[in-house]
Length: 409
Image 1 (cartoon, helix red, strand yellow):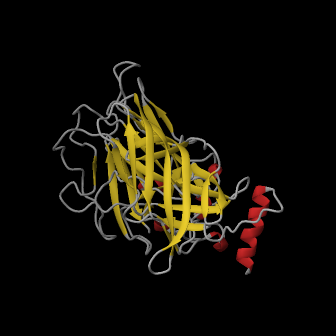
Image 2: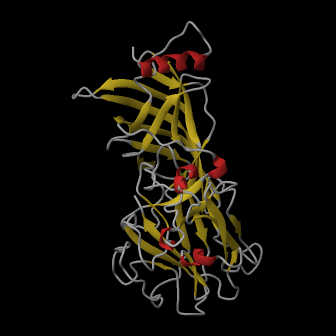
Image 3: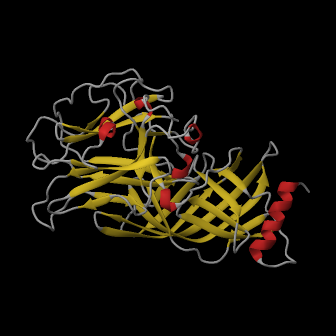
């Protein structure tokens, strides 16, 4: 039978609480990827045509369940409890709503049915025939759009890579998903992480020449080589836009300092703080960003948090609006044992906050910045008031904020 298979059989007995019911979890448990045929189709009120999206390349994990045979994890805040009947598994009754953040919108999905059937392709590799149905709702411009039904179809195949665990909410952090050309690229869907985003309402008046922009404003690519030099902000050439900062919520316990040498300041980096506490080996640093003031408490202000609510990011709209962004800052570790040799493999490409200027460590693949045009009539600040070298990563430039980023995976 084998040790691993035996464990899975035992897990099934414990999950169901029934000593005379033994099911085989082995064909199901693991990491799976939807193929190019994967898609989701939703019929929604107030929309003339169905919404159609692709699930191609999206991963999910199937693990032994606790009160059921299996638990299928679509994201850190979306899972489906399932029971097995031979080579089929179906959702164990009505599932709680899932909160997911896709294409800049937060969706509340309720999965009514979910069926998996193990099959084999022409090469003899295990595949899954998947069919999911349910209902969904999301908000656009303050209006709730209800989708009475959605279906997910496709043929997922087994991935050789183990799914990364979501980890504790207490020390969750955010990394920036990588995209070669779109600075607003959302976190890719999948097990072990979850999409979130911050929108910062930038200055609307033309009181100075600078405005929100990303690397590439002069026609070069979004990402620069490690030895590139930062140029001054270009004059505004178009409409003033807001800052949209996408993140993937991941397990903060996977991150450590990159050095124990206090003289190697270039090894410092930061991630967004999403839990109650920063991971061991890092310190909390906060940038208070003054945003465009609304004319009245009821006027629109775009400061917002998208996705599962963060415990650490304070967002205020209306009069005297601001955003408090909390980070976890890794510098030199106190012991060599508290150093990691490489950044964790999270199943997708990502970047962290790191100084664009100065010498670049070998782990920097490429780098970029985002310039946020903050409120011109109020001053930004840091907590603590003297941020030290952290200010080289989350900069205060021209009274605005510059986010320096480095791709590490």
